[in-house]
Each structure stands twice: as C-alpha cells, then as structure tokens.
Length: 80
Image 1: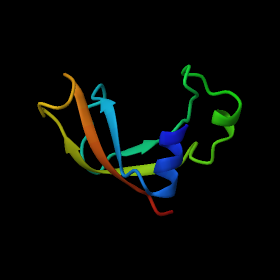
Image 2 (image 1 turned 180 degrees about the vertical axis):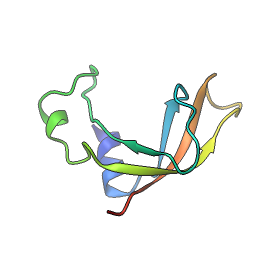
Image 3 (image 1 turned 45 degrees about the vertical axis):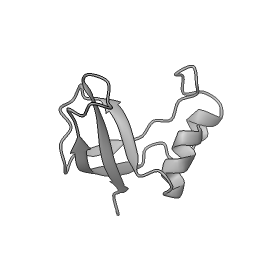
C-alpha cells in the first residue's frame, strides 16, 4: 500500500498501467486499493484513497522503457 499512500500524499503523481482501456488525457481513474496479493481486504479495504477520482493529464506510451502495451499516466486529484 506504499504506492497508494504516495498517491494520496501527493508525492506520487503518476501511474503505470496496462493500456487495456485506451487511456487518454481528460479521462478519470478511480482507485481501489488492494494488498500485495491483489485482494481488497483489511487495511487495503479501509485505505482513504479508495473511491477517489484522479484526472489523467498526460499519457506516455510507445516508450522504450515501458513494457509492451503499458503506459505511464500523469495524474492529478479531481477537485469536487
């Protein structure tokens, strides 16, 4: 959950994701925090980042340092 903590604090302003949704600037992502096993239980289920929307500001794709079909997303919290 260290990555979720870093997003919530503002220290981490990017996400690396498989581009299985055709991400583009202006899209929003909503976080669901999971534990290292990939399950939303215990502290992960209660994490304050759960359900918080972030806007995608920039999509880095087709970059040599990223695995095939992965993108780096610059994100910022959506003000409500």
